[in-house]
Amino acid sequence: MIYFISDTHFFDKRMVHNQIFARRDFLTVNQMNEAIINSWNNVVTANDIVYHLGDIALIGNNRHSHEKLLELLKRLNGKIVFLKGNHDTRATFKYLQKNNILLEDKIEKFVFEDVGILIKHNKIQYYLTHYPLIVGPAPNRINLHGHIHNSSVNMAENINVGVDSADLDYLMEPLNFGTPLSIEMVLKIISAKKIDFQKRR
Picture: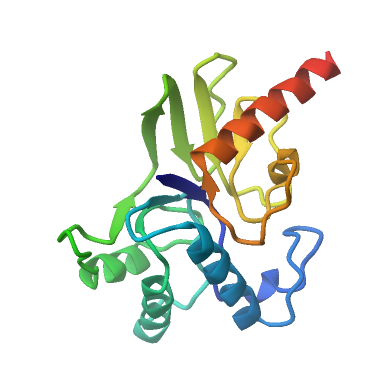
């Protein structure tokens, strides 16, 4: 199965107990990190793929910080495809690539992309980016993105998959904070957002 997530911001002290910009209510960075790890591993299995659309963490650009991040990422289930966010440095990507982990099938756990990815699923094209991308109204084109935290692009074709996204409100059932979105959940958000926008006309 495939999942989508963005803007985990591991180790980011500015995000802790921030309910306006990021809808996070934690006392410590460790509490926030552990909540995301637990939510992730509750749904993602070793055989799943997670597309992380940027802003993995906010860390120092040094070996110690990179080691801490690697140890945390090792705890996450599945193969992870990382898109570079505005807070992700090339040095971080290079360190993680150099210290990549081989899964049981000898496939690398981490894959890295700079700008974006196009995937197709059930005749829908998903443009995966960190920043919102205006793909224009079309029945088979959707932009999955992050970056804008507790906000939503005012277009039905743009879905914010960040952990603190306003688009998560389109799901009828609340998710544990940090739960990656399955393709089925994404489709529910797309459908509900389209209905919402049709009502506004």
